[in-house]
Length: 119
Image (cartoon, rainbow, N blue to C red):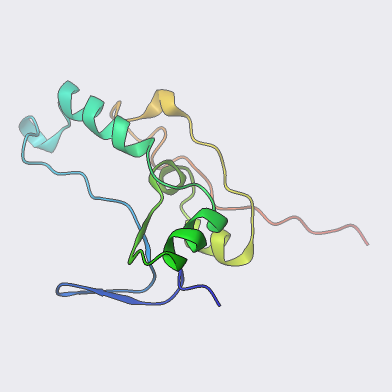
C-alpha cells in the first residue's frame, strides 16, 4: 500500500495526502499582487522541478520522504491526486504559459475526460 494518499501532519496543517507544491509568495510582488519578471523566472524554474509520476513518488516515500512535490504535474492537472490514485495519464504542461499573467496555463487545463465506450 502506498503512503502517497495517506494524510500527513505538517506543523499546524493536516494534509489529506502527501502530494504538494510550494505556494508562490507575494512578498516581492508588484502592485496588486502581480508577479514581477524576476518572480516569474524564479517560480518558472521551480514549476519545472518535482516528480511527474507515481512510481517515483512511491520510491521516495519508501526511502523515507515525508512529502512529495509534483511541480509541473500540479499545474497541468487540476485533478492530479485523482489521476495518481487511479492510474490515469498525467497531462503535459505548456511551459510557455508559466507566470505570464492571466488565466491561460493556470485555469485552462481540464480535468481528465473519461470516454464512454460505444455499445
